[in-house]
Each structure stands twice: as C-alpha cells, then as structure tokens.
Length: 120
Length: 268
Image 1: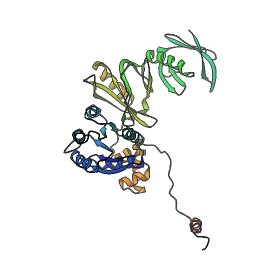
Image 2: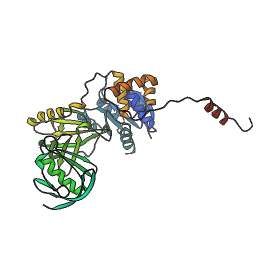
Image 3: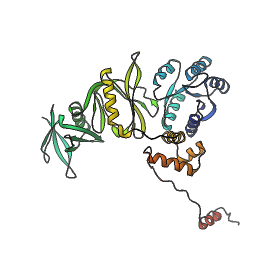
Image 4: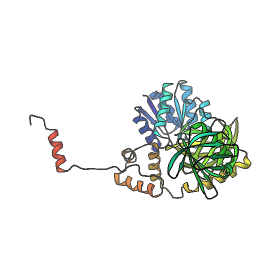
C-alpha cells in the first residue's frame, strides 16, 4: 500500500481516483490541480507514487513529470491520459513515467497498475 | 476431405457426427449430410467451444457446431477468409488498451479483417479475434505513431466482459475510410443520439469505474431519489441496464424490540 498524490485539474476525476485508491488500501496524502502545484506538493509530501493527468493548466502533466523527475529521479509517476492521447504515453515514458492509465478507467485496472508500479 | 469429430445441433439436440474441412467448403455428415461452400457464409459467431455459421443472404441456414479448439480454429480461418463479407488485408492490434491501461506487450499483427453480420473478425497466423458488433462502443479514425511515423488508423472501442478494450486497425489510406464508413454503418444501432446532461454523464462515468450507488451518492452529494432519477435517464436512453434492485428497509416494532433486547446486558 502506498502514499499517493493525485494530480488532475478536475475535482471529479480527483474524487474518483481518491475513492478507487482508498478502496485499494492506499493513503491519499495530497491532491493538486495543476503541474506547478503538483511539483510543490511532491517536494513537500514525498509521496510513494503520483497519478498525473496530462492536460492541465499552468504546467501540463508532462512538464510536471519532467520537473518531478529532475528533483527526484526515483519518483514513481503514473500518467492518466484521455482516450486518444496515447501518443502522449511515449513522450511520458521517455520523460520517466513508470506507468499509464487511460480514461475512462475501471477501478480494478487502476489498482493493478498502481500496485505494479509501487512494487517495481 | 479429412473427417474430424464434432457435435452439431439438430432439431434442438446435440448430435455427435463428423465434419470434413476442405479448401473451399466444409461438409457436415449425418444427420445433416450437407456441403457448405465458405462463400455462402454470411455470419460467424463464437460461443466458448461452439461456432454458429449462418449461410444465405437471408440467413436461411444456421449451423451450430461444437468441437475441440484446434478444429474450430481451422474452420473459422477458412470461413473468415472466404465468407461473403466486407474483407481486407490489414494490420491489427487487439487488445491495445484494456480497462484504461495500455497493454504492454501489444503488437501489430498482419492478417485479414472480415466484417460480418454480427461481428468484426481479425485473423492472423497466430490469432483469431472477434468483436461482436453489439459490443462496439466507439469507432474513429485517429493518428498513431508506428515505426516513428504518424499514421492514420481505425480505433475500435469495445467491451469484453464489461471491460472497455481498444483495438486498432492499420490499412492503406485508400481502404481506411471505406473500412471506417462500413464499421460506422454496421454499428449504427449502438450510437448515442440523446443529449446527456453533465451530471448524468458523471454518474455514467462512476458506474463504469465500478462505483456502487452509495459511493456515487457520497461523491456527487446526491440523495437516493436524485440518483434514482438519473439512473432512470440512463436506463431510458439505453446507456445502462439494471444489475439488481437494492432494497431500503426500516425496522418494524418487532424489529425494534429485537435490537433493543439484543443490546440489553444480562443484568438489566
């Protein structure tokens, strides 16, 4: 079980992910609504894993991922992309993402991916 | 034509018999005693260890055949590659995304695609995949990076055991649009034509994600009655189906007496 930071610009998606991850026994240590806030929260909370939306205001998910990896190369970040943004996945992997989930997602698959990244 | 053991459904019963599989036709022995050219086949369905083969423009012949996997694989391959269907050679990747997670070892496979009455079939040397048309949830032409080039592909979203799966088809540009149009037409029945308000859309998303009614009520701050109204909208528009009916109860005086007595200590 891990301490997780959820990053998404919509409260709805954050709440959904929070419910799913909580039901899987994880601790949600924080939430962020954009990339800049994600970087600040990461440095403050040092979570075990970050779920990161790609399209966000201020600093997008890829930029935030790069910034987090620059600050902590061991950071475990799982990208959340919408259907049709699969091209982003390659970019995210190149930038150091450990996993990815595509919206809309189902709870068991999210938990499986998070578990796999946490245990890697 | 080499004969293999099968069971065939005849007059409502499964009858053991034999089947011959040739290059251009198959034969079912007694009690059917029929030879069926693959080109007369208009539909092929698969159910566990059975296939259902429909022949004739109006579906005059329906053959339900049960056999071991090896036999059905050979039969299906001949049917898919020769049946009366929209068919083309293409590359496919199925599944590419499953339940919102990219399938790590997904690969492009070279093969053929046949669009039949009830399903889209992919067949390669290694694989036979069927996507039933009534399980298709979306079709679009999109761009995908393949060998460092951005190429147009047809993306098919579909359900497998209530899990959203995405498959891709890659074929020459000249046939890509034709395939897309053909698939759109074949799946017209499952297109969403109704306007869905944002709240109903959010509820649908939560249902898909696996949230139960209580979780949805808590997350969206909805009353039980409000959620029921939204469920009715989803049911009415064919976007959802009833899984089970939940009961809400209150205790009768007998029930209250029971729980009152159950909390009393022996000293009371």
